[in-house]
Length: 156
Image 1: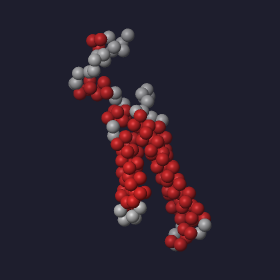
Image 2 (image 1 turned 90 degrees about the horizontal axis):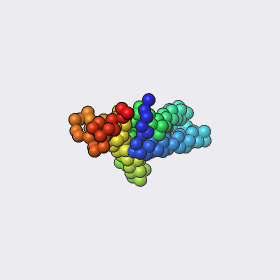
Image 3 (image 1 turned 135 degrees about the horizontal axis):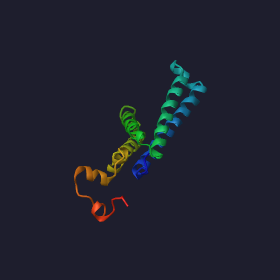
Image 4 (image 1 turned 45 degrees about the vertical axis):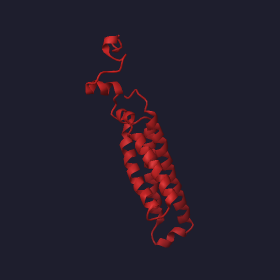
């Protein structure tokens, strides 16, 4: 069991991923409202299938956010994958859809989340290492006050 809480960058990423999941549920609400109102039926297909699909995706993103906020390392990789997918959506919004502001906003959130999950502390946390353990494994000298010669080895 992990005793160390997640770094601040992971918690920030968890909040940003939760924002993305809530945005997805907002999209679902608009899509459902249009479908119930009959506007969505103009395309000839059933929009309720799209509502169900995007609901599941959004709930999955919220589950990933909950995992990050609760300090579960399994959530880091799916969160990174979601950022890659959503960055492609942001690229499309900025370019072909000509929704420049929406594309920039989503792209900025994706990049910020990706960077937050790729900090050294977040990466070490994901593999359950501390900076001292990493230094010890790499053969580098430990910072002053952390070596066994000063009596802080924890064997007391």
